[in-house]
Length: 330
Image (cartoon, rainbow, N blue to C red; front, side, top):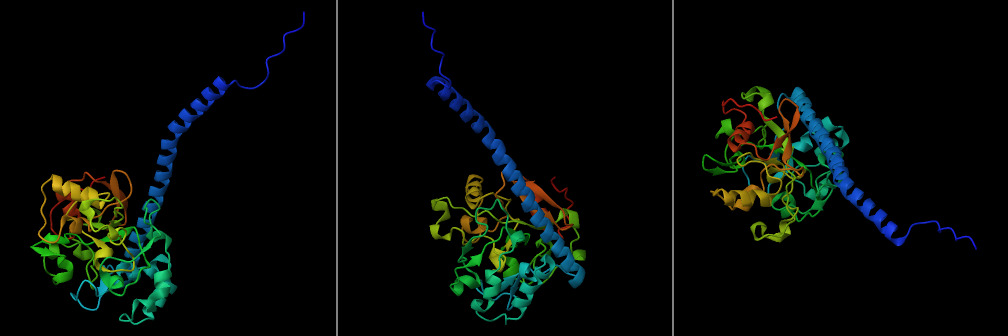
């Protein structure tokens, strides 16, 4: 009797399918952990960028005895289209960009934007959060000087200065632009147009007052609430374009997207005295991280503030001198 042939080496089809299935399950289990680890790394880098910008503000204050102006204009209240630049331009020497600052200063402020092409072309790593889907993109801003001059290559940033009670304070829209600096000064933030705020003016305390934070909450979802659709990216924060593109208010709480903000205001019955809910939701803080927004405080520290933060507390944290005692959220 002949010997039985030995079983061939290798897997049967059933065994192979079982192994593939097990691998698929393991990958499915590991992927969320990998994504969470990547987001944690990106969040840490974003936090580091905010920390560097906060320290740059302190260094600027050490030299000038004030914080930089939030935006620069030819006069206090010309028009939406007359903004020259942002306070981030003034911070260039403090973030190791002195040659870029010199290049900007060498051009007459009233010159066309094409004269500033060296500055427009510059890409500064700490101005972008790696979690921000629009980081590194160039757009034609909605409103602002670049819109008027038909520039289409303005680089977005992920961060904005705190303008405090920017909307609907005392019946004024955008009062820090339209009104003089003494109008409702107690509800202003730390940044306004053509004027730097000194630390002694922050009577609510440096550790309890917002300095700057994430303004990266542009939507790409198609929704009738966000019409016109061609604004995707054009209302994002920008480090070179002044006014609406470099400052955010705390009248409404932080939201991850503009659409989230609009839907929340509709749900809670909020009304707007000026413009539309979409218009006002564009000028709130918000970031790409799940659950909260990274904010730098006037004392130089950086923390994440949850989107569920009490709105009244959030408003008070944005004001520099309302005199109301607050406990900052941790």
